[in-house]
Image (cartoon, rainbow, N blue to C red; front, side):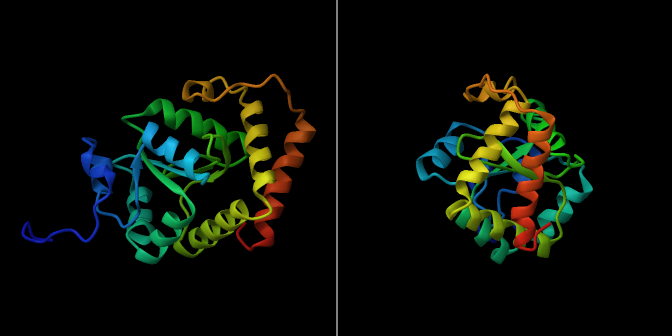
Length: 205
């Protein structure tokens, strides 16, 4: 693109200084940086949050951007169902660690890009790393529709259970109240199985 051309899309990452975030400033995804504005928007609109974490030298981060985040049809799904937040793990290692721990607690292999789905209180209920475009669109649709429909309570309960497992120690940094309830290993395994089963029904996992 020559300097005389105006980008078709510009999102809020254009205000940031991180080179990684600026690389996504002209995606058709309505990316927000991590912060109060995005978190309050999710609460106000009662939409789930998608946090996508990466860094400038990450090969698969760039692959997923090219395949999915630059794709208008995929971006449309992301914008419709989620408040989308981009995080540079080199700029916010604290946020990266919180959600990497959450994904590990779900029994998922961690890595980057790290894509984590949260309820409007920023509590995670599902996550993974790189997804090919077809799988990504299926996942977006399944989770988005499930949260808008009859499975919202189940996903919120999953988020609460994962927060309990993590003891909410790090999540408390983001105004999330820790709870005293404990979860047994059996309950945790059942929780993961149930969440996986709900998404399997929709052909995602």
